[in-house]
Length: 57
Image (cartoon, rainbow, N blue to C red; front, side):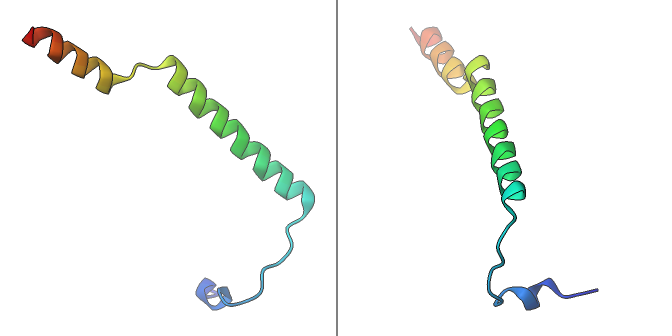
């Protein structure tokens, strides 16, 4: 098995454009899903904090 740490100091290689665009698209989709999940999910920290403040009053 080849040691991957031997290749650390090697110069970087060019990435094919179609591979780069696919990776960037996948990252954009993951970011979109994360933002949508945050939009439609509850902020549990805020809810716990507000409930505990209302009980003290």
